[in-house]
Length: 525
Image (tube, rainbow, N blue to C red):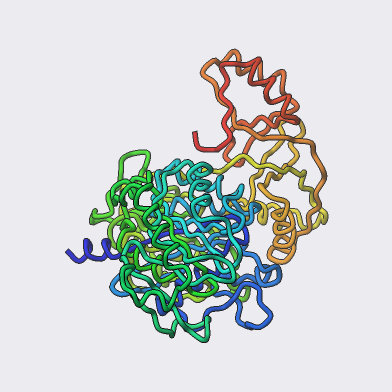
């Protein structure tokens, strides 16, 4: 019984968006209302000296962007919430895609002035692959924004999902007054001198109450007309269709000014799903099973640079995780005990004795774990849905210091396990090629090889348009393909064949000439 209660009070979600839409600021305010922090930090601000809780790496503080997913857990009422704040910058998209495998629902943040942007579309596609329930938060209404109805149309059109507003803004820009909560049916206005703390009073007034005029005059009539139109145009909110991922509830607000954040949090706690089934190659795993299962979805090396520790992030899918209990590490077949599993509040860690499905636990890793590894109580399972995407940018990697050959090989091997980039070995000359999704990753690899492994590397240019994994049932055609494309063939880290097309024309020509060969752009097929 205890297990069932613990599972039902868990909510695990990720916050995703295009860069600069306000993910980290929203995370800060959710932590604030949840009582996890008492003063909210800011990502970039001259007046506020405190940095955001979730940006803890040195490079994040320097550039004012998030480069790694951070995990934060806190209690709100009787609900345990686990937030994963993801990087928006497309150079780190890979990290974000993998994070989405470990959550049960998603909040998408959209900038009210810019509307839906490129990166948001890509992320939504990943949510759609898994039918993840989605909520939308339209942010920055304290600045001049697009018309709310136009924004809703744009979200429907661009993200290919039906929407249903559950909050409505009262004006935007300099005259922005607050948000009307349609879910709880009441006007919520937040008054506070200091927007960095959660202390302030909230007013709750109904729409038909004459006293409403004193607060939102001259917009009262406008609001009533808008809400009438909303009720007429959009179908009533249904919980089932939201949980199936067919309808996205939309909230409006300004994370910086604390407007609309509490409404979002209160509604989210009530409607978001608790941890559900997980898919493995062998069978579906229900969270209510007695025995523990879980998988590693992220590895972060050197979280604390002094004792150089690697932490593997384990998402628990079923059963109860206990400290010092032996668990089977499926890929190696060894049983391992964990003396100090940790729970996170960004980089602050605390040792825990137990954890339940939906929670994310940090395990100290000495270099034995990889992304996608499964832990069970004896059963051999392999979780699916943790893809590697085809990289966009490529470079040859060469050793710059002949004395440090071993260090370089070890460094490349461990960083590739972390999923920072992908390694290909050319069939023609055996040279190593690194493929990444963004240019910033090359800098990160070079910096980390030098500072963490003491190895120097240099990059050399190479002309590659796309890498795709190839397979075929027709062995004859495959051999012909290997002969003709010998110069462009390579192997990935796991020994699978990869075709490195140098131009888009060469790729479409190969697809045309060899119809029986399947070209895959993700590593899971």
